[in-house]
Length: 257
Ligand code: ATR
Image (cartoon, rainbow, N blue to C red):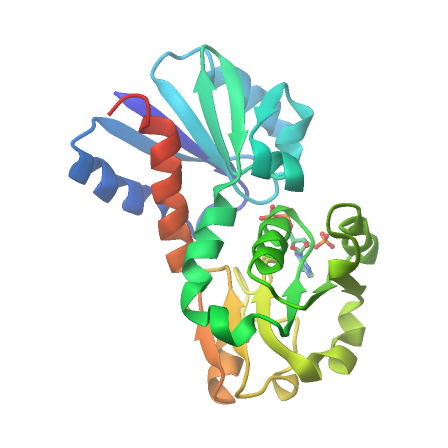
């Protein structure tokens, strides 16, 4: 039986095993996808435990490990290398190969909104691994400018090393001053995952916005509920997860099926 894992913390919200179970059935492969709650300091031990097992094809990484994995001996593909963020790892002969399929998932899921957001301004909440995939997609589809608001301001500033003047770092308390012309808001933080809270006040949202939360469980975070109240288009992260899973399957099973 082929084995795949998801490492990250927390994982209680994850639908990934259910989605993969369905794909494995369709593809008629004997494979399992297991959740393995892992904090940063536990990652080394987890990887050492699984990479010698010949049945292991690879694993996914979610918060807070997408950048932590870069400390390991891992060969990166073009996109994960550009944004220094890995959410999919292929294991071959105990060696690690890193990919960023968040990028593909977000890109595919954004297609219906492309016309509205291109040439306009966007606001991204968060400056971690997921945020970088989102910025890259927005840059490639022709968004004019991206504001990055993050709890730790210095982390948003650091993203300038990759995205230069395409991004404008702002403090969370400055959102009210820049939000007027923003057409797309994307939450890439974990705020809203475990508690009914949001980083943006409802009074700052309006009906012309597309409000996208990468969180899919709960399906409506406070940010999305507030968005619905003001008549904005809202979207959760389920479609992105679905497309991301398809891309991961291509990477893990491409040489087998
Ligand atoms: P991922 O790789 O999935 O993007 P991550 O790199 O751990 O996960 O990033 C999590 C993001 O959520 C970060 O932007 C983090 O802000 P900090 O850089 O200040 O840590 C943000 N985040 C997590 N908890 C938060 C909270 N309670 N308030 C505001 N931002 C939070």
